[in-house]
Image 1: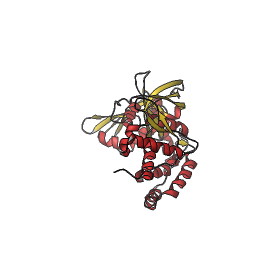
Image 2 (image 1 turned 90 degrees about the horizontal axis):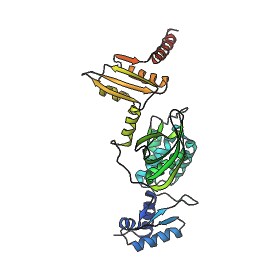
Image 3 (image 1 turned 135 degrees about the horizontal axis):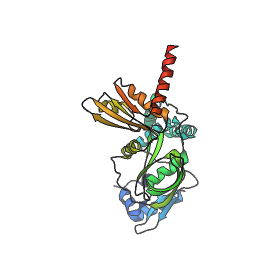
Image 4 (image 1 turned 90 degrees about the vertical axis):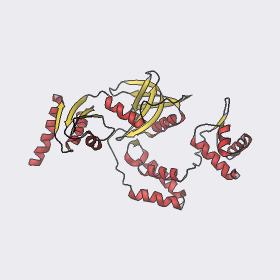
Length: 324
């Protein structure tokens, strides 16, 4: 049974907002109407001011184009609560200038939420205490949006990238997913020029551009983008490395450490394990070693003289402070 006309137009608009492009046949199947009815409804949306473009090709299709004004977004209950929860926690400081924009957007959303959802959002708000992180690398909101859209629409993405060494490169990749981890944003993508998968720190990306060229997504060489990122971080070459032997089960150590920090845990015997650590700065790798010390288990640290000296100096400062 088909929906009434106003409801069908809203459903059509919701479908156009959920994906970049639809064929006429797909829309007709979803709405349970004929292709002629879809074309007529598309014309009515255009008459109401919605910029719906027709696409050429064998099947033909439609996409909701960008216009002068942002059209109303149609969200179901779970989507509305998810958006509100995201806005509530957006003041983490990892995206440049997002705090004020998030507050304005949340105010608008709460104004139009039905009563049944306002209570749910209010519960999330009352239970949420945002921790604002300062001083870490930040990403530009427009850069993040461009990359996210390219991932969604399966469009080749070009950008300038600063390597860890500071060297500048130009990249053209097949974007797969964005992953937020430990206060940073990462892009997981396939690099056709390297014929391999790569991860990119988004705060090092500049001038991102979706080329308009579509690609067929490849299968990730991991269970998920987060898992691939974890492996990439663990396998990356770091300036400072250390091996720590811990007299505690590998499962206990893994539960204690952040899953996306650069580390590799290998069981040794029945009750011990070794942890390979890597970081680009002495303070960062020192923090990881101190994290392991919090396990209250016997440790043996194999590290360079430079790292040993840094650890010794830091611990002496702590002991001197205690003795005062």
